[in-house]
Length: 109
Length: 112
Image (cartoon, rainbow over all chains, first blue to last red; front, top):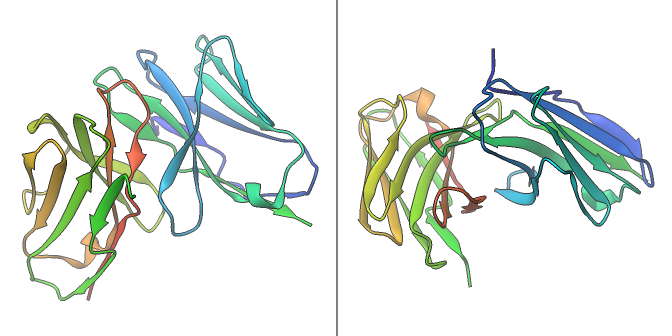
């Protein structure tokens, strides 16, 4: 079983749509959680950290459920520029970042 | 002013050669990493250094040898390159080990 699992997609949505990505992780001792964004042929960039209480950054909302070992990312009012691969990332107990394989999002006009 | 810079950006080389990739960060971070992203886009950690000390060494062939001359630099030397080494190699840095990382733009290595 992979340590961090994501639906690979692609999610193909029209501009303005709301889209949600889910992620599960296997190690209950994981300590920190993040969403990264990676554009084609570019490096991953930190989108947001994920906190147990849930957190929002503009059109992006992240949720963490430690009991279910489940992380989500909600994008409201999708823009063309949101097209990218979204990586669910978990920091394990030895402080390593473990990456999911990513969910590809395509926002069409 | 680039925060984490890697050179070269592209590297095409023949099997059996030895090559190095360099990484420098100007963020004042104390921890640096090498990650490998294969053709399936999976990002996997290879090594981590904290203040020049090796702290993470994943199951990587010993043909791969990292070197950190100071906390702002982490280089990766690869001996006897194989076809399977073809991938994108990302350097990253962080302050401590708790926060998210800043990645370099990657080195696309192709072994022919």
